[in-house]
Amino acid sequence: MQRERKSPIRAVPGLLLMILICLGGNAAGIHATEFHSNGDLIQGWYWLRDRGLEQYAEWTFTNVPSGTGDIVIEITALATDRVNGGRGFSARFRLLYGFPGAGPMGGVFETVEVTLPNVSLPDDPVGYTCKGRVSIPRSALHGGSQLFLRVERISPTDNHVAFNKGSMVVLMGGGQRTEGQEGTAHPSERGVAAQAKLLAVPADDFRSNGDPILGIYWCRRQGHFLEWTWKPISDPRAIVEAAVNLELLVTDKVNGGSGWGTTVEVSILDFAGTQVASGEVQLTNPFRPRFPDDTHGIGYKTYGVFVLPNPNLVRTGFRLRMAWPPSDGSGFHFGGAKGRALLALVAAPQGTSGATMPSVHVQDILSNPRAYLNRRVKLVGKFYGWQGAFSCSPITKSDWSVGDAGGYIDATGPFPEGLSPWDEAS
Picture 1 (cartoon, helix red, strand yellow):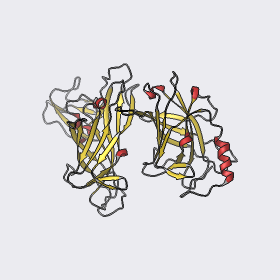
Picture 2 (cartoon, rainbow, N blue to C red; picture 1 turned 45 degrees about the vertical axis):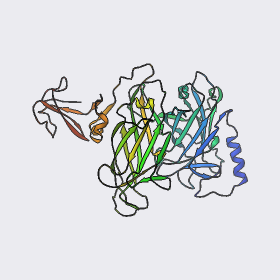
Picture 3 (cartoon, helix red, strand yellow; picture 1 turned 180 degrees about the horizontal axis):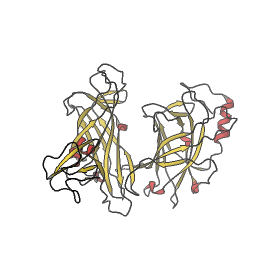
């Protein structure tokens, strides 16, 4: 097995023989028709090891046979703790799976976190091989025969992991269980409504007239924009909540500094170009220290979210557009690319009406009030009557407050049912 290095090394015949011995025992199954990765290529394996978690590997399978049971995937990967690292480490990663989309319909994906055990033999000179089998529900095919898989590291502190086109095999007939080679899969999101599903949907298209620099389109002049497109989603389940999550780059000027954030106006357009919703996204940059001069790209990453005011927009498809200048008057530059926006939605259990209201906190509303206009939500926090213990008391005795560590909102009108002027309730 090849050792991970900073650059490709010369092949050693003995190591190539070890690869055939270790990997030649794969069960018969369906192999990917397409494979893509932006990982670091070293002797046929694509290593995912960047601290920015931008590296990935993707597989597309066609003609997956119909059936009734779960789909079993045999996964082979390499793992180590660092460049030129040690042996015996497991492979931990996030697996996205689902229908890749076809024609006018966009893809729909669910996520799990997977840990593969290291199965290297004692006499393996490298000891990087990890292997296991993971089951995913057949409903991921959405009635079709195509399956899309994507893996990415979860944390910058996770082990380095490597994959190639043959790393994923869909086993025929579900495959036989192999003692000591079961990968473990865990739901990657917690706290959603019982039996509801969190679906992750990458953008189907992206365009920008910003200045392209190393794969990022920078908006820094009047008229520059970023625009992502999601095709219609045909999932039969009711959509409870949907939001676009953004990881954009922001800096204060050309060759600018670190730690800067900004606020940008957002327009949601239908495919005819008509604006159907609008709001703002606050792009938060947690990097410190904040520095005004050239940091060569260090400390530019920001995070923001735009909650769709009508979750059913995902059924008709939409475009999300952000244009320069920022709405906060900062004049800061912001940049993005296709992979820096991800639509996430909560689908109610199949056969239900989807009447479950999304749970939000005060800070969610304060950060983007327009996104919640005329929406019914479940507000999570502490409720206080006018003589309650909250530090920011309501203005009059007929008012009440709701708040948490992220802030508070004063509400005018009758108390919530069962809340007296002296009470505090959750």
